[in-house]
Length: 592
Image (cartoon, rainbow, N blue to C red; front, side, top):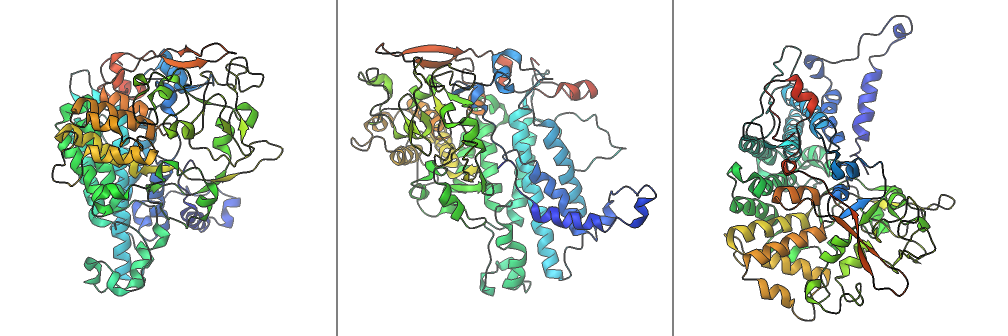
C-alpha cells in the first residue's frame, strides 16, 4: 500500500464541500472553495483535512527500494532514476531522493492546523471536544517530528560555510506577506525541535489506541475531569488505531538520535549513550527483559497473506510498531517475480549482499573453506528466505528458477530486459501464493511496516555497543550482545554450536560493530535502509555491485555488474537547486 488511507476523512470532506455547491454555480462562477481559519472553526472535518494531508505525504508510505543505489542490489530497469543516480547523475536539480518539496508543503499544512485547532468546535460535548483537540494537536506535532527526521536524512549536511546544517525551522504557517528567505537552522537545533515536537506528542497521545468499557480504564488525567469510558473511546478508541501515538513519537526520537550520533552527524553533539537510551525508552515499554519479546517470526511478517487478511483493523503483530493498512494486491510480485512467474524482476540482489549472509554455524563465509564448492548449502536461512538464487523455488507452483547464464528460460542471466543482471532475484516482501499471470491472476493481502521493532532493537545494539561496549548495559538490563544473539538465534544460525563466532567477538567492540552493521544489512534488506545507513556511517559508497555467472560445469565466477559513482560530498544530499537560486540565505551543502 502506497499511502495511508483516509477514506473516512475524505468522505466527510467531500460532504462538506457539497454543502458549498448550489444551483447558482450553473450560471455564475462559484466563489472559490477555500476556507479561512475562522470558517474552519465550525467545520472540524475541513480542519482535520489539513492534518490528513500529512498522512497522505507520509514518507514511509511507499517502498523506495533505494537498495538498488547501493552495494545490495541493482535495478534491471534502464530508466530507473535510482540506477541513473548511482552511476553518476546525482545532481541538486536531479535528485530522486528529494524530500524537500513534498514534506515542506505538508509542514505548512501542519502549522496551519496547529494554529487553528484550539479554536475548532470539535464536538458538542465539551469533554470530548477537549480530548479531540489534544489528540489532533498531538498527532500534528508527532507528524511534524517525523517530517523533520526524513528531511534531515535527505537534506542535512555540511554547508558551504562548513557548518552542519539542517533545514529552516518554521513554526508558524506562511502567507503572502511572509519572509521566505529564511536560513537553514543548525542540525543540532533541528534535532532539538524534533525532540520538542515529539515530547508534545507523547504528552498528548495514548501509548496505544483502543476501545475501553470500564470507566476505571480511563487515564487518570481524563478521569479526574469526569471523562467516561464511552467518551474516551469516542476519541481514542479502535477507530484511531495506527494513527500517530506516544510510542510512535518515542520511536521517531530514537531514530533521530541514532542518526545524530552517527559519524556523519557527530558534530551535532548527540552521544551514542543518548541514542541508546532513547532506543531503550521504546523497547522498555514492551515490559521487563525486552529482548525476550523479540517476535520469533518477525523477520517473515510478509510471508502469509492469508494471516494478514485475518488481522483485525489496526491490529499490530508483535513485530510491528507502526504499519500501513492491509491491502490486497499483486503489485510487488508483478514487479519483482522472475519472468517465468510473469514478473519484471526489477530488484536484483547483488553477490555482495549474498556474501554478507553467514554460514549456518554463524561464521562469515570467509572463514569457511567449503563455501565455494556449494555456495548456497548450509547458509543462514535468511538467504533462502530473502533471495532467489539458481535452483531455488518460488511462486504459487513452487517453480524452480534457473538463473544460470546458459539457462533456457527468461529467468537466466541477462536473457531479456526483465531478466536478472546479477544472477539473483528478490524474494523478500513477496507473497509466494500470488499468481501474477494476467490470465489467471490472484492477489493477496500485504502490509508495509513503517517502523519494525527489529529496527529499534538493532538501533539499540548499535548505539549501546558504541556507548558501553558489546556487553555493557548502561542503566538497562540488556546489551548489544544480548540483542544480536537473540536476532541471530531467531534467524536460525549458530544453533548447534552456541553461536561460537558471536562468542568469540563479544569482547571486541570493533568486531561487534562490524557484526551489528551486517545484521542490520541482512534483517532490513530491501526495506530502504542501506543507502541512508552507508551515508550516516560514512562507509564506502563506491563498492561495485557484483553478480554471479553460472555456466554448465564451470566453477561459478563473480562478475562486475554496475559501478557506483558517488563523490565524497554525497554523504549529504543536496538542497534543491531551484530553492537555493531563489533564496540567498538558503545555503547549499558543500560540493553540490
